[in-house]
Image (cartoon, rainbow, N blue to C red; front, side, top):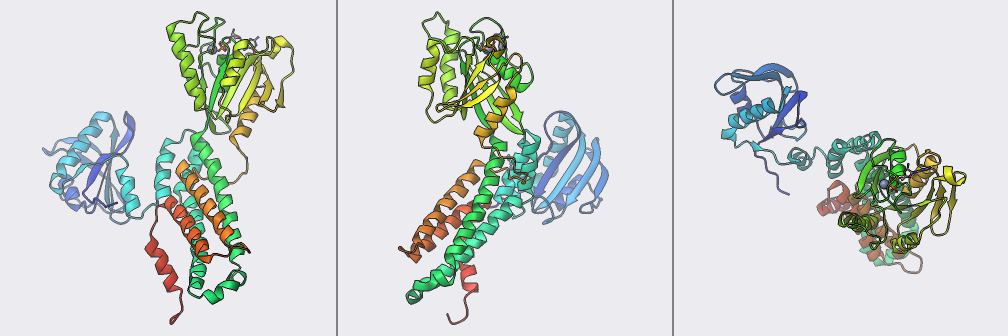
Amino acid sequence: MKLDTSPIAAIATAPGRGGIGVVRASGKSLAALIDALFPNTRLAPRHATYIPFKAADGSVIDEGLALYFKAPHSYTGEDVLELQGHGGPVVLRMLLARVLEAGVDLDLRLAEPGEFTRRAFLNDKLDLAQAEAVADLIDASTEAAAKSASQSLSGAFSQVVHRLVEQTINLRMLVEATLDFPEEEIDFLEKSNARGQLAGIVESLEHVFRQAAQGALLREGLNVVLVGQPNVGKSSLLNALAGADVAIVTPIAGTTRDKVSETIQVEGIPLNIVDTAGIRAIDEGVDVVERIGIERTWGEVGKADVILHLLDAGLGPARADEEIVAAFPPAVPVVRIWNKIDLSGHKPSVDQGPDATHIYLSAHEKIGIDLLRAELLRIAGWQQTGESLYLARERHLTALRAAREHLHLAGQHAAQDDQSLDLFAEELRLAQDQLSSITGQFTPDDLLGVIFSRFCIGK
Ligand code: GDP
Ligand code: ZN
């Protein structure tokens, strides 16, 4: 990635009205821009200067605070100028236009999405995982997600990944040093405790993976699909889980024609719940709109992390339910919910069956809803560890999994009966590449540097 150092500017605050709004500019040097905007004024770096923001003709657009951060001591690592004015959409657009006009000789242009953060990454202000955490913090939909995003942003995740990379490099260095001296290979693994070191790395990686996987759950949530016959209480259950009236509940079969989706939180984990059109056989006189709803239902079922199949506890399964069950994707866990126990007389309960978990509850009377919440958390793999979590992305988990696999293979090459040190070293290298890809510091030259710097002279 090449670094484009042409100066950029954009409105940094969210669109709409607010108490304050910020126009931000970044570039290698913004001295000329500051001169053009504020002639005869010196902005001391890192000090707020209360100042009128004037148009080219001298009329005042707004007044507010000008903040100047001199390179490299800024978010992007370049010169940064922030103008904090009033947060109205029109006044901010005027201010941005003025800034662009004042910077025309510098080729100042409008910033692309994420460009400030991209520059921060390219200038080593943030690594890749931290840059991603900036976006995740902004996007966080729950407090728990925001907390773990800021944990990643602070570099805590990058640090543990970096430690894994270093441990892997150290071990690799040992192995590669031995490769040149075949006669020493035999007892190398014993002497250096290479297997013990490898086991240590694997253990640390497992720990990081668990924290990252839990964090990823906070970010991605769980896709939950509600299916069942019309009138079994799907909409009522969604309402009970959400604690608000989001779906239409009526006693007429087939009213939920379109899917209603709602994200609710259970212990900070977003559950993306889709209430589907009631499934019934197409020949039962359904109209076109309902038919589309039915077809869409199956599309949602395919994307589910868990299927909630609702039944009326008093009536039991209908013939169509057997068709529904037969069509479920086999890998997706199913919770069979026996609803309306207030009418049937069943007690609220959970029962782990071979094909599905069975839960007896009443959506309308809100009895047994906690049993369902607990089961959803169990299926999500949520563990309350009390540890701080990293708001990892799927990309990070994929890299951690791949690294784990390479370390596993490395272990096989280090096994008693198959000592192939070159393959051992190669798997370590592959694991290292995967780990480095998380923080974006994939630089093989570094490794050579480390290896040679630790060799004795003459060896
Ligand atoms: P859907 O078609 O599957 O979405 O079902 P609804 O949620 O619209 O509910 C259909 C009817 O069943 C409504 O009149 C609900 O009030 C009623 N209902 C839902 N859950 C229960 C329950 O647990 N007990 C009783 N007695 N009625 C319920
Ligand atoms: Zn409904």
